Length: 249
Image (cartoon, rainbow, N blue to C red):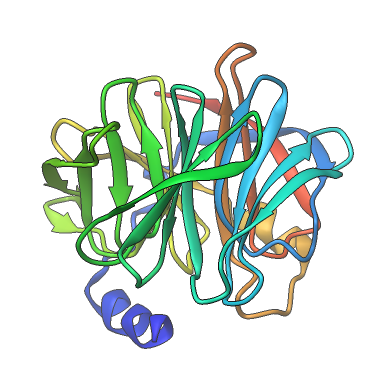
């Protein structure tokens, strides 16, 4: 169970000091579907694309930003638990949790085209223009060829020399990998070349305003609009998606 792994991992995770946090502010809030167990989130050509998890209801969605309306959806077979999502060359690429199976989707038709396989669990997925970057619930970021999904190396993510476990949803932004750390209110800003955490984005003040009682309704979902330089964040079952602006050091 993920919750057991969480408790064990948190025993090893040293909380980042408050003075190291990257400053941020909310620019705007948008509606977000409260039935979405958000596992992957990207922004492409004016739309959000979202991977929704949980057995039996996992799916890929195209979502209109301004009102959260689901424009299209594609179900994932009920035996799979949908996880991370990214894009590559006109396709959407999604992971599953424990089945070691990923899917490629034609973005124009929303139909699955092929499957691929990988070792371990699938959690978050992003790409840097050359490689796919995957998290698997450990402190590692794993790199893959975007066409063949052949392994292309890995790096261990650390803060003050200590591994940072439970890396979850990912987004590549301006040379950094932003990573949700599962069951926390923090996003790690990671140097993908070294694995070192550059700094932390503490969104605790934002999550507390939502007053969510569901144990699973945690921060998870990062999308970047490169054309307009906009960063979006949300969480599982959250009623809102937020555009935030960072003040990098």
